[in-house]
Image (cartoon, rainbow, N blue to C red; front, side):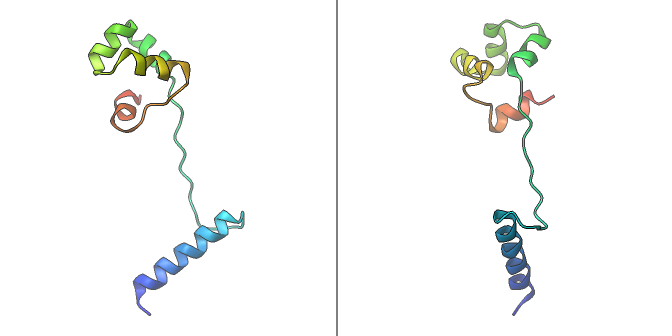
Length: 81
C-alpha cells in the first residue's frame, strides 16, 4: 500500500481511539468564549454605535451579549483581542 494510505489509516486509528477515550495522538482545539459585552464596553461604544461600526444588526449583538448565540467566522475574527 502507498504512503498516503498508511498515513490515513493511522489517522483513522487515532480518531477511533480518541472517540473511545483511549490514548491517541489527537490534539483537540477548543475556542475560547468571547465576552462581546466586555469587548464593546472596552471600546466605550453604545450598542448602536458598535453595530454601525462593525456592520452587524442590533439583534445579533444583543443575542451575543445575552449568550444566546456566539460570533462565528469573520465576526469572531474581528472581535478577537
